[in-house]
Image (cartoon, rainbow, N blue to C red; front, side, top):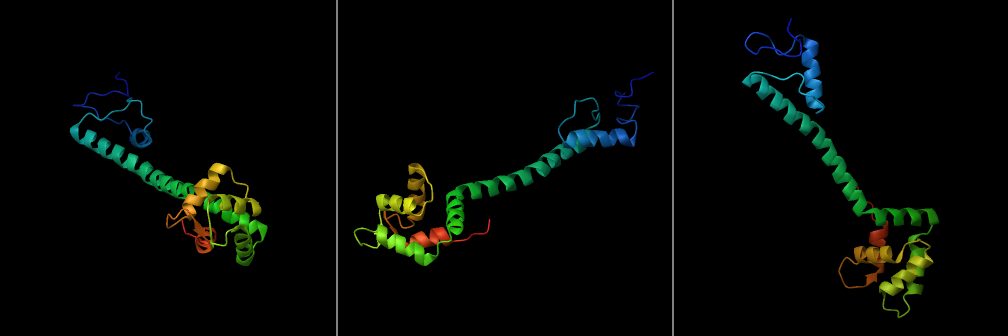
Amino acid sequence: PQDPKTCDPATTPAFGSIMDGMWYVLVTMSTVGYGDLVPHTSLGRLLASLQIVVGIGYIAMPLSIIGMIFTTVWSKRHRLILQDKLFESGMTEDDIRDVFTRIDLDGSGVLELAEFATLVNELRLGLTERTVKEVFSEMDADNSKTIDFEEFVEYMMHHEEF
């Protein structure tokens, strides 16, 4: 008797039953097949190839969407964390303006990096020196090496849909 997992391509179908065929599709789509059931005709190989491509696309599409969302959120993590901390502190825009004005020692209406670091400490945002520099660069929309109050509020109060 012939082994049911192998066949003569000229006389025996590749799959002994519908369940064998379903198993083949399952292992092919999930890429866990062991080669124990293989198509023997060109049409069978074509169909198997299409199933493999569709299976890869079926997994790749949602993973790329999830990856894109993760990348977007990760790039905005400082903003999200700071927004959360400010929300928890209960500070209003007027409270923040008062601190901003008090920290602006030279009265220029803008903060340089050192003044911004003081502002972050006053607001008790708990950022490392490196993160303060990164956030400062993100806030400095016009690349002037200073932050005015509008840039600060836009960064801190801006809400985006992800």
